[in-house]
Length: 321
Ligand code: GTP
Ligand code: MG
Image (cartoon, rainbow, N blue to C red; front, side, top):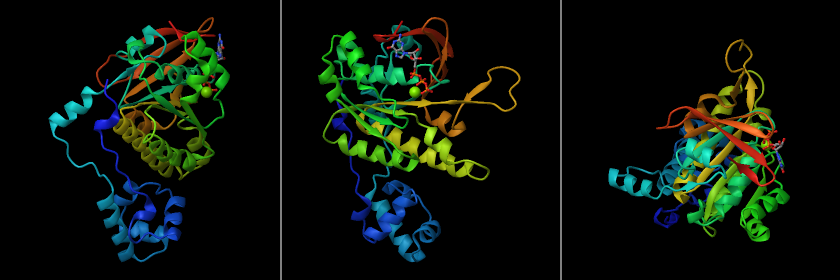
């Protein structure tokens, strides 16, 4: 498996754009325009209002942002084929779960794991962090890991335990896992940029966001905030996707479930984040508790695989069949 070298990384900072001084940059960041892309696609009127600048100045900033940002443009089919040839798979520790999702967690894609408390989402993140450091012939990505931890549930002791179970040196494994606490949703979004910076120096092949939605859910409450929340989540999801593409990395996010207020029939739970999260995630896995440490994993949504289920175990060693 090749590394992300063939994929270009080019991203300027806000302050490097003509027309954006430190004060304006600060205002933009506060308003959630954390990257150039979000400015490049904004309208002059909105930007002018938010930054308290003239519309013509806003238009100039947008024009500069458009020039500086790697908008993406068009890729020919053969280039896409070439990029897709690089797609890798990361083992989850369970053969059954790997098979359920087509051979392991896919790079250049977002996998969302949702389920109620204690269903094993955080355990799966820890397990993936360990296997991602392993060589490719063992189902790993020979890489380093970025973990965006929003709930302070990262446990190095658990990583050490899982590493030993895989025959890996716990300290060496821990050295490859870069953890950042996200204090709120804006911080969480900013940390994706930080991850991109880190990925210039380290071969980051797995980006974990545990939990993807908790901050958004807590911050955007009440009527009238839903559209705003979904917009922010959308921006976040696309930044994650972009990271996955640029670095040929696995993006693994966790999500909680909320009771449907009017669900009398069928599954009484659904993932947070609605269509935005659902449509941007390439794979959705629903985890639920079963007897004696067992979990049932259900593949809910994928581009080419049928809905199906498998059983996994959470034990001292980690995630297993
Ligand atoms: P929330 O973040 O609260 O929504 O839950 P989650 O889905 O992240 O749950 P998490 O992954 O933290 O799962 C916790 C469960 O994993 C525990 O209740 C245990 O059942 C299991 N577990 C965690 N560590 C161990 C361990 O060392 N041994 C065993 N046997 N089980 C463990
Ligand atoms: Mg958790």
